[in-house]
Image 1: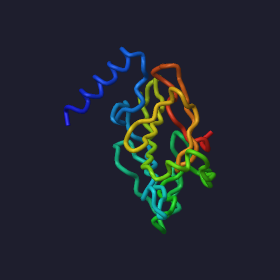
Image 2: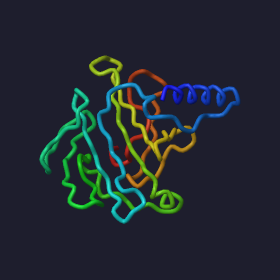
Image 3: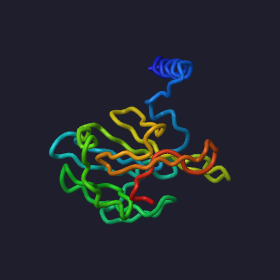
Image 4: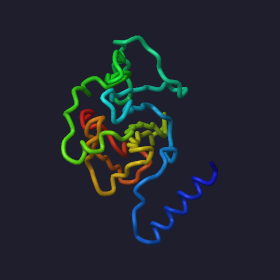
Length: 177
C-alpha cells in the first residue's frame, strides 16, 4: 500500500524530466473534504445507472427520504429513488437531468467505471474553493489537453483557477453552469 504513492511520485518526476504531462493519478491526491460523489453503477450492462451521494460536514453520507431537496454551496440536490438497477438516482443536482445520449468515441467507453467527486477546500476561509475530480476506471482524468469530455454521467467542462488557493478548479458537469 505504501509503495503506490512512491511509485506515483517517481512516475510524476520521470514525466516531468521527460517533458511529459502525467495523465492519471489517484483521487486521494486532492486536498479538502468530499462534498459530493456521482458514479456509474453497473457499468457496461443494460442495468447501467447513476448514484449520487451528498456528504455532510462530518464526511458522512446524507440519508434522506426520496424527494428531499438539500441546498448546498453548489446548488440544490434532490434525492431521487433508486427504483431500478438502471435508475439515475440518489442525490442529483436539480436540473441535471435529462442527459443527452453519448455519441462517437465517448459511446465506446460507456462500459467503463466513471466517478465524479467534488471536494471543498479552505472551508470558512478567504481561500475557500471547490475542486471537481473525474475518474475513469479509478484513474484521474486531467484537463491538460481536453477541456470538455463526454461520459455516461453527462458532459464535463474543465475549469481553471490559475493555480490559486481559492476558487473553483477541475471538472464540473456542463448542466451545472
